[in-house]
Amino acid sequence: AVEACENRRKVLYQRAPRNIHRHVILSEIKEAVAALPSDVTTQSVMGFDPLPPLDTIYSYVRPERLSPVSHGNTIALFFRSLLPNYT
Image 1 (tube, one colour):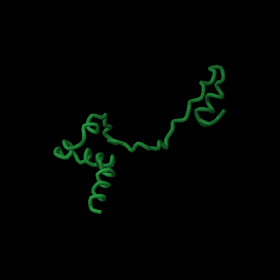
Image 2: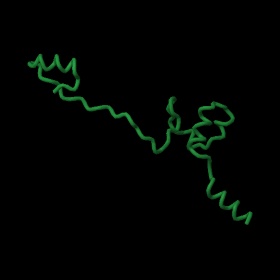
Image 3: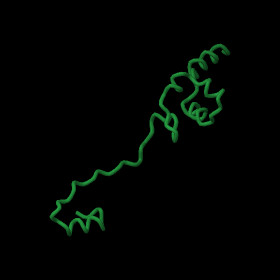
Image 4: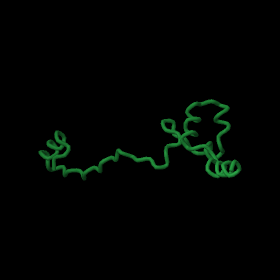
């Protein structure tokens, strides 16, 4: 029974999870960073979020800009400057 548990553990826990790798990078402990696998250390890392989750949801999407209003319609340009949603 003990061997079965050890074999199962070796299959399930082959490496540390991604969030642990992120924590190690943020800790900036040289010895810990040196112990990370090479596939983690060779990835490009963003300073504000190293190793973001693979299922990241981006909640902010920049709205599309409307086509510019013709130069002859000064009143529409004025209202658009006051009220961006004015059409």
